[in-house]
Image (cartoon, rainbow, N blue to C red):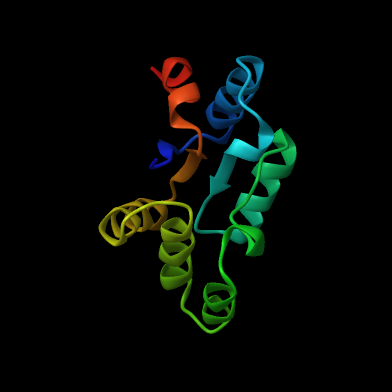
Length: 116
């Protein structure tokens, strides 16, 4: 099943939503943060104890390819690895270019009621 995504421009609103998701029983392992800036991604994910899309979510080929890829290519590959189509990954990467941060939940059935 395709992950559920919400876009944020305000880090505090994103953090509030992550806490709400956790309070409703969504596990940390099902919550991912992704932005165009690695430092911002790490800072937000650490502050809310959420995941980033790393080597454990990607196959070995993607990890090696990402080392030599441009940032946009790397982000699209990461999104494809966790369940988005090439087209969806491209659309979300454009949003990341605009400074948005993605909150990605890999258990959409569980999270849908909270995010509605």
